[in-house]
Image (cartoon, rainbow, N blue to C red; front, top):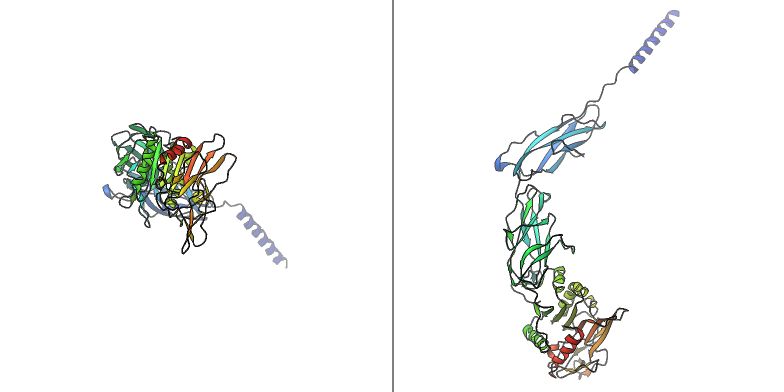
Length: 500
């Protein structure tokens, strides 16, 4: 019995000794992770070198821990970026002025303890720079609607461009722009340029520097570009440059005739037929009132399914209209004219411009269209069901002001539309100017005089100074000279009211 107790005592002491030895030992450290790449070098020379956009693949091992991620360097281990991916595409940078380089990508694994591989894996990539490219983008006819790539403009020009670089569009440094002369000092456009607009500083001079806008902004770049010629053909050149200073070839626009602004008055002809008969009517009556100088714009001129004188967008058209103080606008397509004017006359009016518009409004025009909301017209009057409005031959249209002349039709006006004028505000007021002469015609019945609202011409003016800035007529004045007194009417409208 005593012997058994002795052995139990000896075993207990040995056990305690063994436990003590385990706690007092040194813990084995977790080794740093190791990193591997698929290849460590790629051998290519000359034209066989890779482009600057390359792919890399890697992995890591950790003994006693796990891989938490990787750090990547493409600048000779000066800086590192963390990632959890095991592959990526890199856009490598060639030093400016060189067309090739040998770039090393370094990868080091990072374990869960934050330890980093002290000997990163690496692969050398022999790369070459690829030349960037740029082209002009022009609108195309769509669904029977002509494109708008003008060949004749006043000195406001807009172009859309598209630059590409095989090494990645992030490699584009910018664009060089030239007006007419590629030997001139290039004008720099930023790398993100997708369009640019040039607006002449001196539109009445023979040539001018231009304010430059990019990407639809109304905030101009700090420096102008010189070299635009007026009353002359111009060609715009552009090329793209990348971060390695490689440049594309020059890309040129089609030749464009830039008209000098010769007066403060613009006649906009929106007729699709009889356009020169109507234009001659207006110009003859303006000249009869001593208004001898004006510029013209043919808004409906189409050649090869392309509008030749309309700007490519409303911003550019608005800046064109803003070159003038007065506009006389006549046309036979209400939807086209009113929607066009709504989107392109804000700058013109904000600059103090005054507009006369005569537009034939046919029965298919939506009487509630929001195309009217910028005009003196609040709403169009619809004829009773089954009837149409018209003005008969030799009909008299009366002025609201008795000192103004009556006017008499010389043709049947089948698309006459009377209207209600807009409501007055504290600062803006509206007045009816001409009315009557409308008949209601219904199949199988004799025509009768229309007794409802019959305003056919109205004006908008500023209350504070009583200045008229917009007169609209829903009847074509060229068909209302039956009393041969349109020269008197023009004097009232264009001299007395609008101050042409």
